[in-house]
Length: 617
Image 1 (cartoon, rainbow, N blue to C red):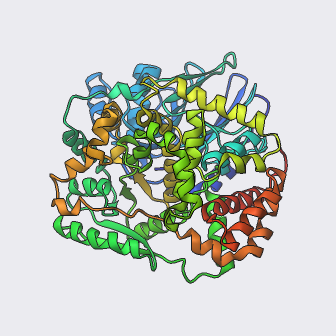
Image 2 (spheres, rainbow, N blue to C red; image 1 turned 45 degrees about the vertical axis):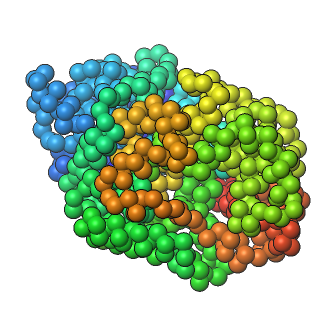
């Protein structure tokens, strides 16, 4: 896994800023760095690469790569079918000097042009400079596992693997987008391709951006869908093939392990890989998962390493440092405190000598593993039960540990526009609270619903099947936010994270299954649990899993009411500060449990402060 940056400028040559950009993202590739600049027509071009050596550790894998065919490439990711593609190229007479997948992509493009992109299986983002055709092509994988941030105007284009790399270029504006802020408070993250900035966007998953330097025309083209990877093979065979392909590396490789279904399936299909388990200190629920993780690892004859994430003994200032760490390094508007723990775990694995780790991420979205999918299956019933649900919550008949989920369920049933209703299951704030936050609520909500409607229009299934409808939204929403968290947290520790259960064929398999099959007999993620029951003893499978829950309640309570109110000062430019202080007072008076709402507000305040951005669009 690596980092890349690129510029294409008509009037200036910001080569020194390219070098600065590469320094900003040096953690993504500590094993080597390279930059190239050139003039093509009237344009100044520069391309850079930071290398984390995984395949072909020799100089033959060095980037930016120029093989002398008029094609220069800077690439971040892994193409898992590169051996098959290598054979294809050799049959066409190509002499291949090394065994890196970068070289395969370059030669494949030389032979097939843009058609080559749909032949790739894996996670990738890359930039190609085609000197013969005088064009530039930027490409991102089908699911957007690897990020590529882009700024473009009428004459110039800049790109980087991270926002900080993009902002190293002085020509890139950094105005914060009010519409993105509103969206962020609806669901806690942003749908692709938004980032929180007006002019900085991600290249959309499964798309390439082609820039013709002879006339300046830019075209963004979709080249890949999940349907491109239809397979008639059994799920077990597809998963085994995916895991085997992703075990290929010239460096040590391990598996992040939780004792749950997804990581246990991956562990079952690997032989010698060590397992890494993360737990928050003094977390009884994590201790429960650890008990089963030990039993499963013992059954599979694997070593289990436990990493303790300690936050319980930190004072308020130390806790704020962890908040700032998350706010700075997520870069986009993503209020996910697990970023900090993911980084800690990644660093622990790196310190033990691992450069690559496997993760079970993505299976919950592809095979309907989240509890909210059970709610969606009962959509009509839940809508009809809204008065009962409100009554239960008001009369305090709901256990305290469930009240936040109940609150979101009630918010879901209150919305008539279903995509917005789904946001209420994902986010923490109700329509009433959002109305109090934003003065221009009508115009903001209109734009937000238009964005959601555009996502809905590309859904090919029946909109009455809310489980499948939600899966469609999650592909560019909830899953994307998880992928960005894992990519940046792991790369910050100079660790490559692979996600075998997001292999294109597995994704196609899961998305093609009916909601009835996915939630058979009321069991979430039924196909995967059924498979795991054939791989390990059933008593290890048929148990509740607690999940990796961040200790946000302790964080908020340690900071206290007055400290929180002081920390919220930065949000006043965007939302009603009085409404924010009301939520804080309600929480500390015991009137309501607003832990997750206060966390999101605190994150946003620190994100604003750390960006130092005062311009509003």
